[in-house]
Image (cartoon, rainbow, N blue to C red; front, side, top):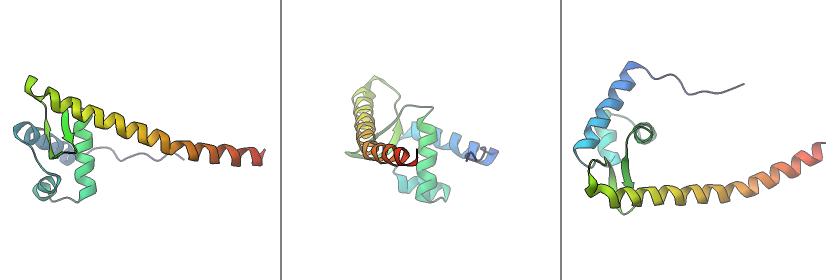
Length: 111
């Protein structure tokens, strides 16, 4: 059985387009996005994630909020975001190691 996310409806597309336009204008904090769209934290994060897969959204730990990179002046912030993503990927890869070892050990017992 394969579990898939539901297809995106017109309302969701409209909200994502609106968020995209907002993030081009200025920096928005997650709480502002939640309040503006009347959604919870999880939905706001999902919306930001979707926009981030299509546009250069800057989100760095030392500055709260999200915005879209628009000019050469954003290069440092873009690189900072990029490095933070790389760091999170490395952390997740390290967390996978014990899971893989456990899985392989259990699989050997089943054979």
